[in-house]
Length: 243
Image (cartoon, rainbow, N blue to C red; front, side):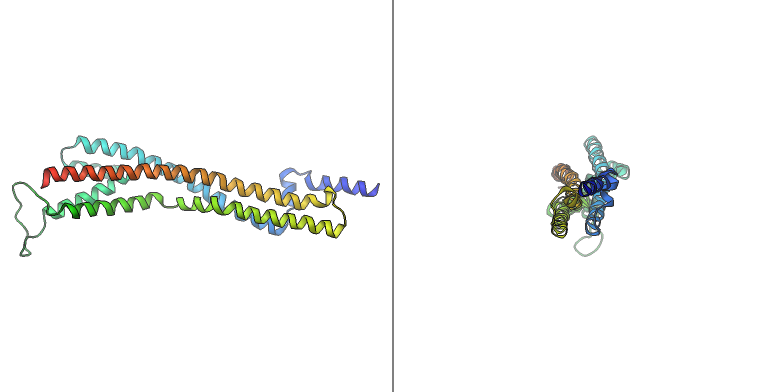
């Protein structure tokens, strides 16, 4: 009779407080695991919100920039609107190409003296221009991918951190069984609760991180393709008008 009363009391004490009561019975190792997982989750969500907004702006401004670029008749006109579309990676590629074209058109002559401006401006090397565009596109792609790798780290690491908490909780459950000489629910429940809550927290951190990592990666690839296409388009215009 006394053992039955203790069993009911243990159940009530362990789970009467809901999630708060459950956390109150979690050991210090499991609490450390939960804090670590919470940090991963909070940082991941901050990155998700930031990159979601910034990538959306980058795509929208890139579409606007392409419209302006294709309707303009002079590079100087396009350059004048770049300050309003800084979120677009195409702006960085265009400015690198525009600077390279200007340097080649205004370059020094063979003797080191400023070259006379010809009736029709020409550039000396399309290869140099192509390299400048590629460097700019690589730099812009790196900027777009910044912080996204943390989501991949969260998606791959947090399930194992949660699994560590799970193993530790199971170990505690078996330890209590050995110490009490009983395998009833009142004995194993605290250890099992540690195991389950750390597992759930690990998945809660990993699943959104994995989803948004793949989503943002696909958006970065779209923007990278837009940069590659724009670089070719820029080269074609320069070849037609400056060679």
